[in-house]
Amino acid sequence: MQLVLRANGQQATINMDNAGSQVLVVGQYRYRPSHMAHKVRRLAHTMWGSELSSDILNERMTFEALDGGRTSGPWIDSGSFSPRSGSFVSLGRWDEDGTVGIALHELAHEMHMRRGGYDDSDGVMREAVSLMAEREAGLRRLFEREPYYTASNLVNQLMDLKAFGRQPFTRRWNELMDLTTDVALSDLVNYYLDKSERVGLEKWLKNFTPDVDLRDALLGKLAVVALRYSLDLRRQLLSRLVRCSPSLAPDQVAYILDSIVTLDRRYPGDDLGRIIDFCFAPHTRQRRRLFAFG
Image (cartoon, rainbow, N blue to C red; front, side, top):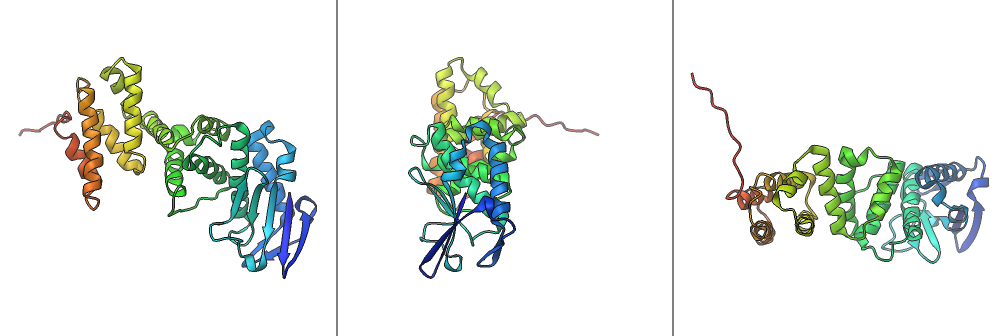
């Protein structure tokens, strides 16, 4: 791994692995290049094992220290990835541990590209796999702009679900490598929500129809509707659906879901949870209540 130092129009490059006990101050943070290189290598090998060829870290991972810790562009937060030249990580925006997380984020783009599917994936999916990777270094960030906002929301939901979050990184990584779209990722959240909390979606679908294609179509529609939902709203959506009679016609289910989307758009200030309940109310079986007489 290389560290490029730029100041006053001058540039110098050092090998981070051979930096010894050298300490570098950029902005408000102190960095130990050798320690950082060791940590990135250790985590990366744990995460990707034999998939991580030696040339990736040696030739395609570069850290930069700029004047005053300033990044080189308005859209560059802490790092960037180019399929042509590899990963670049800027010092000065995060502390040492956070910067290691940024390095893993950019490295995940590289590994995604080498696995295949990177070019076919949408922006949310590309960022989702990298946001999951940076969490291995303990870095968790908040975003306001897309595709980072939706990607972080979906990844955080997955990691909060025990059936997914407790799996080794390799298994989680392999599952995400099979996906290319934000809707597919949303569907995966629904799957693990059902699996973790036994919502009953899988059982309800089997009773609803033996047609696998129809089940997949309904799952896809649920994923689209819940794409930007919180985990609580997803839970509410699925729990209301499984309380519907399995004899409900497919077009009625589609109408309910479309109605939720329409009302949410028409009345953006209204409580979405109440909209979900309102749309399902005519079709859900009420839970039996026990009354005590005395």
